[in-house]
Every structure is written in structure tokens, then in C-alpha cells.
Amino acid sequence: MNLLNAKAWGATVATLAGLCWFVGMSLALLMGGWFESVVMWMGSMHPWFSYTWGGMVWMLVLHVVVGFIFGWIFASVYNAYAKRLK
Image 1: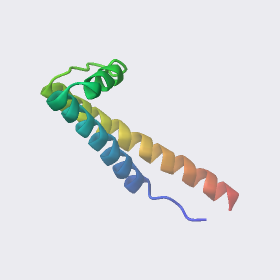
Image 2 (image 1 turned 90 degrees about the vertical axis):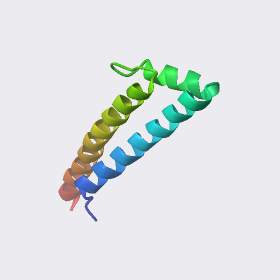
Image 3 (image 1 turned 30 degrees about the horizontal axis):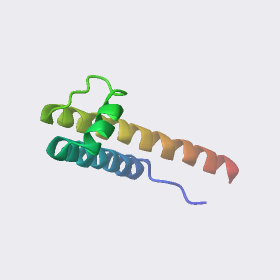
Image 4 (image 1 turned 135 degrees about the vertical axis):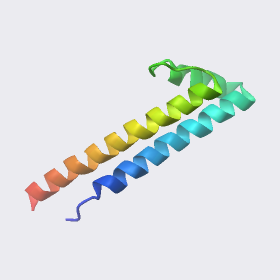
């Protein structure tokens, strides 16, 4: 069974989480409408959320950091179980 690279998984999840939030928040700030209501709903679940360009930067940083941590933890737990099953 192949093992996962924890740093690569962390970087991948961090990139995807940050990119998704960046695109979603940018569309909401530029176009409003449906995007705005979705971002405001998602933002209500995040600490210190602000519906501004500065808030978008904060959410981007937050998602990159948390995404890396979750990706790294997922790969590490997967590797631990994969080693036990060998």
C-alpha cells in the first residue's frame, strides 16, 4: 500500500481551500446577488468575518492555514493506519 506525502496533501488542501474562498468572495464583492448571500451565510460560521476586501484576505489566510493542517492530519492518520495494515 502506498503512503501519502503529508506535506503535499497539506499544500494541496491549503491551495484548494484558499482558492475556493478567494474566487467565491471576489465574485460576491464584484457581482453581489446570489454569490453575496452564499458568502454571507458561509462567513457567519467563521471567526472575525468581514464582508470587505480586507476580510477576503483574512479568510484566504485562515483557509490556507487550516487547510494545510487538515490535509497534513488526514495524510498522517491515513499513513498510520496503512502501516498498521501491512
